[in-house]
Image (tube, rainbow, N blue to C red; front, side, top):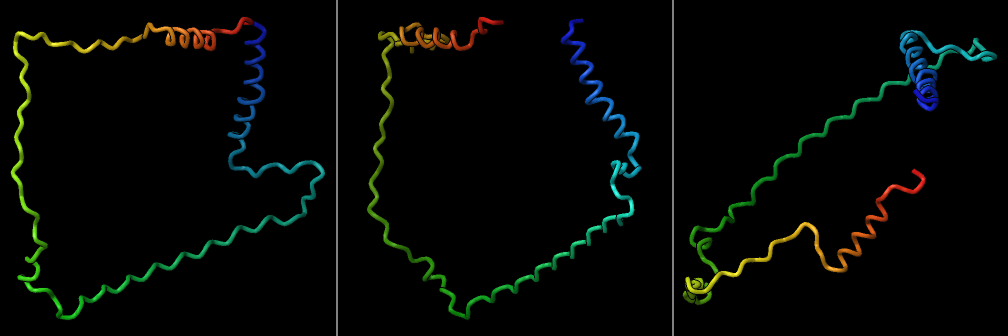
Length: 133
């Protein structure tokens, strides 16, 4: 065990573990008063409870407009539709079995062009461990 490990464990013990245990042991007791602090001061008053907010009143439902409802015939009337033209049907071109299919180039994980190699060298220099390590 090196000296750094020992110092780390001592720091952990004195500044983290012991204060946490002391805080757990004093759970129900009031905090101690510091020396020289006047003890005759009254205790602080508890904060008053906030008043509950009043609930919003429900809004009355709007009444429907008077008897000016459209008739069924008026609702069926629409704007005249433009002239319809039949759709043109086109089929896919079928390749004849004599023509060989061209395969799409396979994507490579690492590109081998000059610019990609240069970027890789730069990132290698950025990410390598410093010389002092």
